[in-house]
Amino acid sequence: MEMKTYKCYSGGVPMPWGKGTVVRGAGGFVFVGGMTGWIEGYNPKSPGFHQAPTVAEGAAAQTRLVMEKIKAALEDMGSSLENIVKMTYYVKGPFPDGVGRSSNWRLDVIDEFFREHCPRLCSDDNPPPSELIGVSSLAHPDMVIEIVCIAALPD
Image 1 (cartoon, helix red, strand yellow):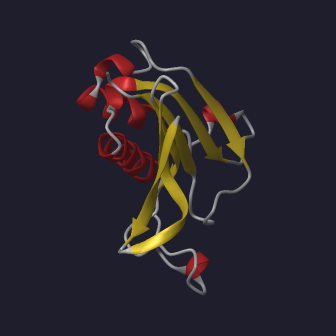
Image 2 (tube, one colour; image 1 turned 120 degrees about the vertical axis):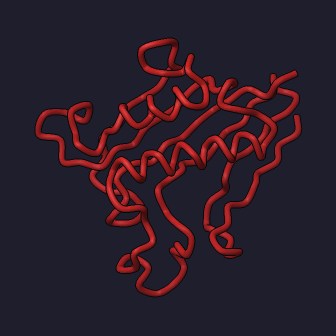
Image 3 (tube, helix red, strand yellow; image 1 turned 90 degrees about the vertical axis):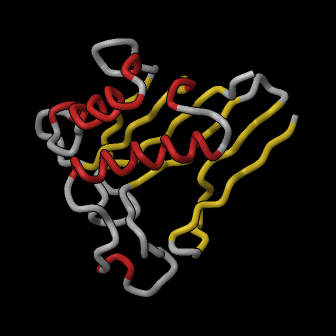
């Protein structure tokens, strides 16, 4: 089996997590690490990064940015949205009415993105298996969504 993990960068600075791992010889899958709404200049190794405005503003903007990053990561690693087999969504609370009704859970934005790029993955068509998990916090206090994705590698 062969595995290769791809580094994640922000402005040339390597982040303390991988963008994803490609596994060959085990059926061929791409494991995309948790993508968040950080923007250029985000550097969790810099002092005071929690106070820096380095996250897209608002749940809709973060969700769209995360989906764009997933698309780019899959393509960079030899796959595509068409090959997604599973997604996990981590959404920041609070959740007085459950995570599915949180203003931070923007399924409408995810569906809009899929309609543009891979319509069969829309929630009203044939979406991949997924988990929606409510969390109290993410890596930066302004982050509201993190998405993990698994995709197959085409033959």
